[in-house]
Amino acid sequence: MNEWLMLLLGTALVNNVVLVKFLGLCPFMGVSRKIDSAVGMGLATTFVLVLTSGLTWALEHWLLVPLELGYLRILGFILVIAATVQFVEMAVKKNAPQLYQVLGIYLPLITTNCAVLGVALLNIQEGAGFVTSVLFALGSAAGFTMVLIMFAGLRERLALGRVPAAFAGAPIGFVTAGLLSLAFMGFAGLTNH
Amino acid sequence: MLSAILSLSLLGVCFGLILGVAARSFRVESSGIEAELEALMPGTNCGQCGYPGCAGAASALAKGEAAPTCCPPGGKALAEALAARLGVALDASAVADDVPMVAAVTEEICIGCTKCFKACPTDAVIGSVKQIHAVIREACTGCAKCEHICPTGAITLTPVPVTLQTWVWPKPGRQPAPAALPAAASIANA
Image (cartoon, rainbow over all chains, first blue to last red; front, side):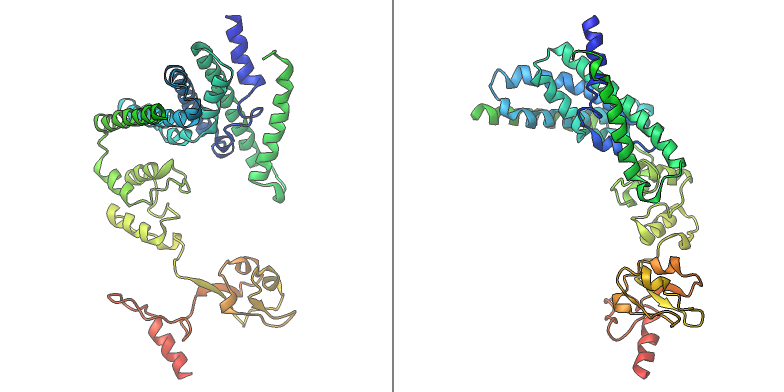
């Protein structure tokens, strides 16, 4: 139990998928103008990450390993992720229109989110079991969501501040992201993961 | 080799079947007007209107929350089509005019301050201090930088005047532009 808690904490804070591993930077910069959309994107990414980490684990251990097809891993994973996202989008649109209003528009964007593929590949690299894989994905997604919301909050404040003309817009966003990343490096001593 | 091809094709066929069945069984009937409006939109989901994608803009339009001019990439043509479909009046001044524009100096109020001259990225404005400026039309890109910087409002964007060099034969089945014939005639007379 304690080990699982440390795994969640380690993936969310110490090895944060955005600020330490630098994966999924496009939604981090793109969907962080408003807190509302950041929350939507974070929740949708959490959903897809957890779902696909389980599915890619199954693909790896039931198909790729028995047939010795390790070189097809990236191709297969992309296929699984894209198909899953598409299926989930259709199912959510039909069965939960309210949820679709909140998450739906972000789902297609997640197909090409490198954090999703990155987490699936890291799971295989570390030889994680099914439960560990899903927990690792959950922790990564929680870290992604938290950082996205924090950064959106910072950018909302920045939009009101007096930013020098040369830094206005994207440049100050990148500077802020760099500082946030430096701050997250401070978590490095928290666990041994 | 064979197992790789077979397994990947099998995977693709399976996902294709699942998605095909899902597309049929999860089909959502959207209300007529929204679907019609969405079909008119560019469909690139660029988000410049401030709504989440073209579907979001279409539903806002259907509810009357958005103006027909909300789509910048669609331009004037789309705004007209949307206004016609919705049966609302179109405020055409809010849409960027799609006629090519170049800068022109109103000589009576130009003070020769050289501000436009310095701002011009293509060196299309000529003149010097306390001399009335002029614009070389061929070099002007219509970027409007000079228009914003002019202290007296003497330099403005105007539609490209029709000259012997720029006049083109109108396409068959189209009315000639109203300004085209008189302008061409006046140049011919001069």
